Length: 156
Image (cartoon, rainbow, N blue to C red; front, side, top):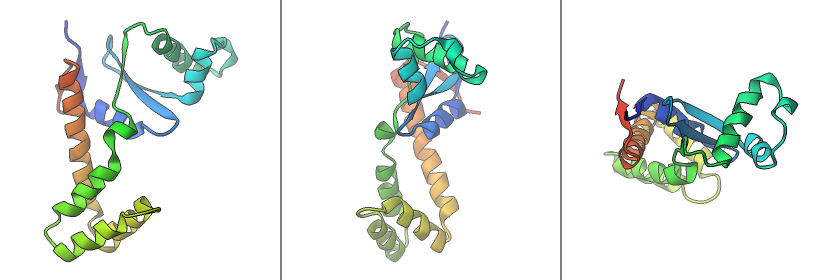
């Protein structure tokens, strides 16, 4: 039986990705789980699960299954696979107002790009447009990932 997941769960998992946090799909249940560096390190070092608080024990147990390569978990695209900077660039270039497009595109060059971009979309009052664009981009990434991994999905 093929696994069926909610596309929103995959998108949420993509949004949770960060430098110290990774998302995986449990192929048995269709659940997306988020595992921290700490939990992965504990699994790699084979630390006793009892040494962790109750709320974290299941996550360490899951991390051990991932480290042991049981085949029950698939890693979701990482933040590097998602490349939010590229999504910001495409958003800037998609704007009809060429002056606004140029201003935003200039804002994302160099150090501090994300902060300047956020300031600019708020200044131009297009934050809602950005978040819709970003969500649509994440949705496309999620759909492609599901298709590449032969995972059936439901979109709401």
